[in-house]
Length: 377
Image 1 (cartoon, rainbow, N blue to C red):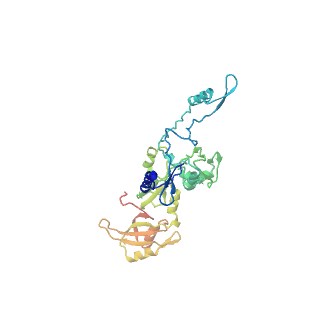
Image 2 (image 1 turned 45 degrees about the horizontal axis):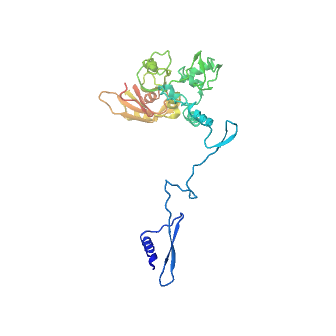
Image 3 (image 1 turned 60 degrees about the vertical axis):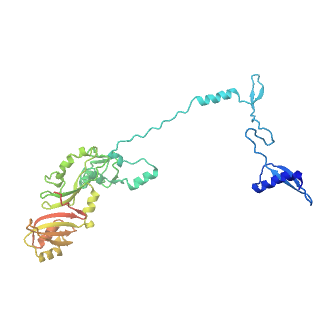
C-alpha cells in the first residue's frame, strides 16, 4: 500500500467498521482512491452525502437562493395608461378594509326556553313532535272517537240511557247541527257539543274508582229523588272537588252492579263505564263471595241442599262453594261462606231460603280479585 493513500484508506476502513452504512438519495460527492501492491492496483469509490441545507441559507433547485414570489397587478394609472406593479391597487385595499369594519353580522341571541308551569292539561294535550311520534301517539295513546251517548255519560251530563233519550228528543247538537243518533262518533276535544244550550266541556273528567263498604238501609240507585242512595255518601267528596281539582270537571259516579237495601259489604263506585261493564257482565263470570248469618242450627243436609242449587229468575243457579264457618264467641249465630258467579237478583238469599234457613244478615266481601278491606268501616 502506498504511503500517499495510506491515511485516507485507513480512515475510511475504520469508519466503515464502526458506523453502519445507510444509502442516501440526495446528490453525493465522489472520492476516488487507489491501492498499490505487488499486483495490479485496485481502484474504488467512496461517496459522502452532501451537508443538509441550513435555514439561514436556503437553496433552490438550481443552487441559488430563493427569491420572493412576484404577483403582478395590472392597473390603470392617473395618466390613463396600463402599468404593472407588485402591490394591489389602493382602492381595493380600502374596499377590503371597509368590508371587515362596516355592517358586521349581528349575533342572534338564542332565547332560553322558559319552563312552563306544569298543568293537568299538559299531560293530556297532543304533543307537538315529529310525524312518527304523532302517529304513535294517535295509534297508541290518544283515545279514538267515541259514541255520543258515551261521551255525554262520561262528561257527567246523565246516565248513558238518559243521554240516549236526550239525543232522541233533539236536545243535543254537534258542531251546530242537530244530532239524533246516539251511535254518532265524536271527539270531545275537537267537536263542539251542546246539551240543552249548555256546552259539554272539551276535557272529560278523570276516571275514579272507589271501594265502598255499603251500610244497611241504602239503595244502589243514582236517582236524585232517592234520599238514602249510595251516591249520597259521596256528597262531601263531590262538594270539595273544585277545591282539590281546580279546572277539572266533576265525575258522575254510579255503582258497579247492585246490592239490595238490606245487604251490606263491598260495592264498587266509579265513572268508568267500560270498567263497570266488564266487571258486572255475566260473561265475565267473576266469583262473588258472601258471608251470611242464619238463624238456627246448620246441619249437613242444609249444606247439601244449598250446594245443589235452586231456580232463580227461571235459571237453575248452582253456587261455586258452600262452607260452614267456625263459631265465634262474640257472634252466637251460625255463619256460612257462599261463593257464586251468576250474580242474579237475591241469588244467595234464595239459596239459603231453599234449604229451609232464615237469613239474619248478608254481607259481600269479595268481587273477583277485589276484596273488602278488613279495616274499612
